Length: 390
Image 1 (cartoon, rainbow, N blue to C red):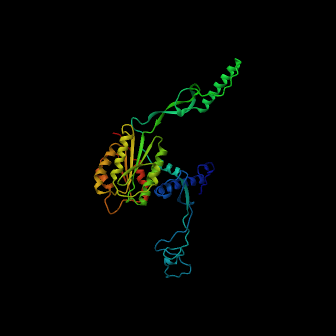
Image 2: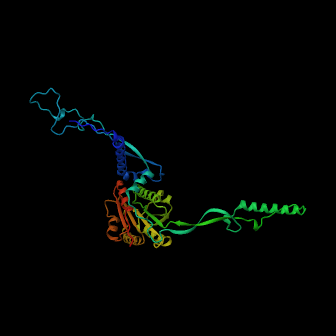
Image 3: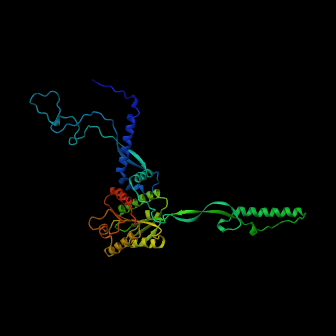
């Protein structure tokens, strides 16, 4: 006996469109996360604003329905005119076959969705359990800062000179003198009326404490001849996404940029991401410049220090020991030191393996990117590395 159940009261809970939207959102999220590696290594990502859109293919969603399936091996359909004893082969079937020319089967629905760089960073944030960059005792340095102007005063420094107010003070003094002479019935023309010190006015500025950054990211990139255009671009994409994400995630953070061949240079952000060079490779040159920078500006007792170095791992043999020594020293003064080796050569043993074997510091995080699609996994590993203070 059939039982009919009245679902009128549960229409809201079982609304098919709501379920479809939920499934659609899951598919979109899944496709975006699966394509993160391709997006992050896309050539157009570098230098773009947060509103730049990237297209991602997504398989379409269909309602469940009965469809004609393909015959399994050993099963075929006939024309209806067969007689007892006739043999029917799978070649009689009418469906399309990849080995027999163009098929006539319906294709799969695939469409594209768009995602901005800002939305992409949201997905990165959700997918990572990031360390706190402000762990040290002096996690925020307080300095004196000057906010809004609060009135005027008769003393101060020249950059705060209130010119308009000074002129008004002189005019008021001049008018006051005129009135005084008129009251005494004295008519003396005032031809020249110079400024006096009593006329000068300065802006009064209220001071307030300001929280300065005490976390620094030091980006170091190999730009030597062995780093061809694809490797350099991948390195820059790596640093670009990293800098965008960190600036968005953390308020108090400073950046330093170093590029090197056999000689290292401290450069600005624009030069770091766009200037091309070539030459030999001394990995130690970039690392030692980072050490000098830390000694001069970023005391490890006051600063959280996060150097990240990118290279293809090729190095002059004579520099290998110096590079290993520099990595060890840099790791000892840093919260974390990240080493990213990009598209390493197949014909040689690169520095990644030597560093991995010989550097014993737990805060040294080496990653390797053998293909463009590995970029996201490398970023995720480096960013999610939890740091434990000793």
